[in-house]
Image 1 (tube, rainbow, N blue to C red):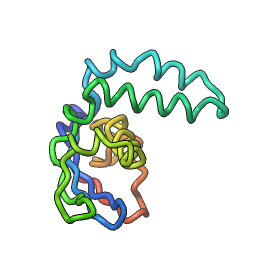
Image 2: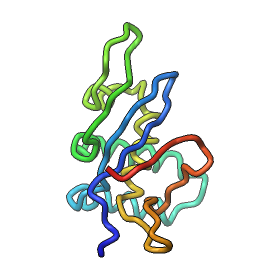
Image 3: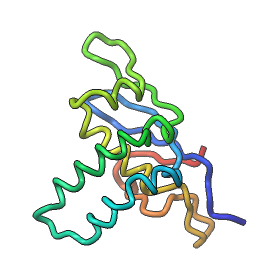
Image 4: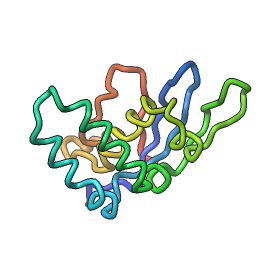
Length: 136
């Protein structure tokens, strides 16, 4: 049986809102679009990491990663209580920290480890954080 899972769900907290996200792993077209930056990051030291990480996030936004890989995005509200969609979030500089967190989820992919029939995605670091990740 394949270790692939089509999508995962996670609840994250951002500025007091609990956001339910269903997402997929990075698509091939996105990998191609950002591959040069991924190579740069893997070959850089800490002093340039922040600049390259921001360039990578901007390239992911420009490549449509969030619109293509985030299937469900519910629970984030603006200051007036209006619901925000992922398309609203990607267009606002204000949400860069949130987009970084979501991008890390997307980059971790939707592959599960085969050991002990684990249903956790590879690179899942949510254990003990109170954040839930489940296969959708």
